[in-house]
Length: 154
Image (cartoon, rainbow, N blue to C red):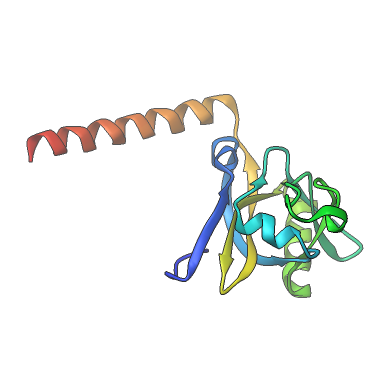
């Protein structure tokens, strides 16, 4: 997770915490081509339909949109291409086991720059039902009301 002052959050997937219970987080790198990192530094990343799969012992992020770098001309690549994630083999095995047996899914939560390198925070997640989403919304509203009352009081 991005905690140091030298880390800059580039993109957040707010929809992930709304649709899923995020349980275990992992930090991973990405295999990128030349102009993609320049677009990431500009913050031109979207997670709208992104998800992560494990194929032949490697983790891949699919559906993540990194816009073309506007000065990249012929060096730009497909914006929605599959990108390989850099994780330790033991982490991939652990994640794959949970995804196969316990009904988890892998979702990208946020992308940030750490010491000049693009990192992706991914999470093992379980889907929420409609009543779970309503309960989360009620708790969030109650917390907001309490903070508002304390602010007016003090």
